[in-house]
Amino acid sequence: MEAFELMPIEKLMRPEGFDCECGVHHAVSCKYLKIARGAIELLPEAVRACGGRKAFVVCDKNTYAAAGERALRVLARAGIESTLFMLSEHGYPKVEPDEYSLGSLAMRFDTSCDIIIAVGGGVINDLSKILAFVSNLPQIILGTAPSMDGFASNSSSMVVDNVKSTLYNRCPAGIVLDTEIMAQAPMRMLQAGFGDMIAKYISVCEWRISHVVNGEYYCEHVAALMRNALKKIMDSADGLAKRDPDSVGAVAEGLVLSGFAMSFAKVSRPASGLEHYFSHMWDMLALERGREADLHGIQVGVGTVLTMNIYEDIKTLKPSRAKAEKHMREFDTAAWEANIRRVFGKTAPQVLAIEETAGKNDPLKHAKRLNALIENWDVIQDIIRAELPDREWLFEKMRVLGMPMTPADIGINRQDTLDAFLCARDIRDKYLSASFLWDLGEIEEFAEKLRSK
Ligand SMILES: [Zn+2]
Ligand SMILES: [Zn+2]
Picture 1: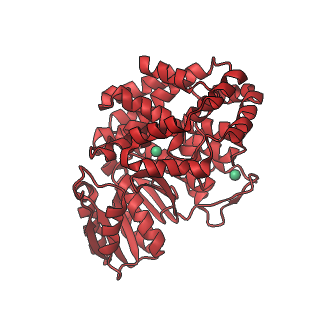
Picture 2 (picture 1 turned 120 degrees about the horizontal axis):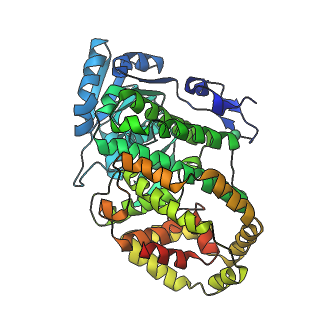
Picture 3 (picture 1 turned 45 degrees about the vertical axis):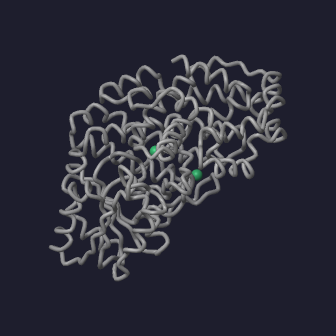
């Protein structure tokens, strides 16, 4: 098989995809991709390439001003009809990726439209992807900021019954990223895109570790694709601070590649590890309290700093079977449940239900994972050394961009950080560093280190 990770981005979109040695057929359903200065003018070409005639254009008030209004004019000039739908906040500080927003999108959908254009980034793209998936219509994303890696992913990060969840659907048919428009996005959104990408060092590392411990599916080619996307972005960090459209373009390409990697793997594993769970947890806590969470990538950036520091201690950790077994023996289900109820409030029943299928606290499953951890500890250490960069080098890149680095920088208190770390393993069935530290009976000591930092 050809090493697709070395191919130019357009080649990755070939309709026949790639029969990989990992056993999975890797393909994306993306037909049209343009990342360039002035790319918004090519929107009519993108609509035609995706087989559309009348577009349902989804914006919020910010993205309407940034690109939506102009997109409608560009379409009209080319003789393409459109219906505009503006998402509203319905009482929250910003549009939430929840049942209400999706319901309002579905109720107001103009059935004479045969293509959906999402103007914006994270939430609007996530909602539109689901609408496109259930209506079996093509979707185009017209990005307004390089703030996250979901442009080309096959999933939506949604709030389902108040729990942050990944819903799998389909990669958009068209991706149009105008680097001049994106370069004018608020600096915090540029920082967020960078934050969502530096996370991938950890994501790939934890994906490999879970492969070793649980035999979870892993593809070295997809991991290599993600590493290449990451390199593209790290090389452009300095230009990003100056809003140089070409650097923004390189970052945007990295974000699209990251989405392709997720679509290829069919899971979010290559793109999210513990650093993302800090963000997911903070989102859930904010939602529970009716407060506004920070941007995904900003929170993920802070989560990356915390997780890099945790790995610094993991590097010198010597696992003890006796300690791990004692921790499991002394596990108190009632106390664990009470803690989940304290942290998650009205969402606790949904979080508790995850354990019924995941079995993280089941002593037999724990024994199996513990054996794998102890037997492979050297291999795991090699993976950590190979995948994670020097943390000072990484932190310096963040400082150049003026990024928030600590929970306090984004108004998150110590308790919420500790709860995020301790409950990260409970909100989804995903094996993270927090999961293996729990398995080794080390989680409380690591939480104590986090508290003192
Ligand atoms: Zn593969
Ligand atoms: Zn992300």
